[in-house]
Image 1: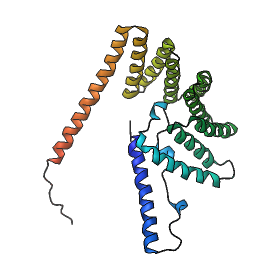
Image 2: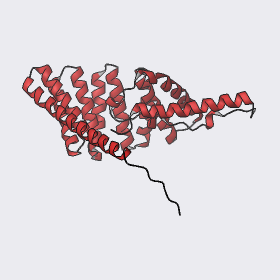
Image 3: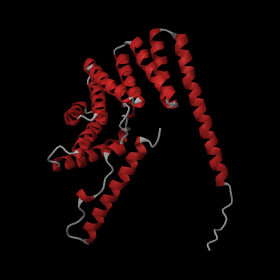
Length: 268
């Protein structure tokens, strides 16, 4: 699924540590009385540090909390400098919403998501408006306001269908399915996750297809449909076996390459 969240955060933390080391060295040696200007240090934005997309991707290990808090300080500092409704403001508002979401500060996250929503609604950008609806749907679900969450997600789904954005449709179907699960509406969960599974199958996205199958299997299990549950779980196991076989083949190739003798390069 691409670069992991944790590796991206480690990359950001490495850059931030480098900045702090430079500041300490400059202070100790008094090379420059002005020191290092923190505002000039290029930090990776939260959109790059944390994958946006699916609500299921909004899971960060506890040890990254300090990194997120430091990043929030940096983002809020940047936000204060923007006086008008520029595209940079939209981006910062959404990034702050993501950061607070991952810290489980959902009310604060909602406040930033709503500010972002109001801005993009004014600019009438359908792709960004679809994203705003999805974000609000996710955060309202976390706040336990399921009806409001579903309303926002359905609005986002309508836009995604107009845009013919299959990937976004799958993501929104997944979130709607999750709401049904939390309300113990397992038939509704099967409906939405089946929609997501079909889209993943069309896009040849094996990971999303397996996740949807697992959700469908769980819903059937909760309803007592054990045979159907087993059938869908078997699809998940089959996909995992394929992934494992692929990983082992890749590892074998790497081992084979590492065993090859390294010849001296000849430069003309």
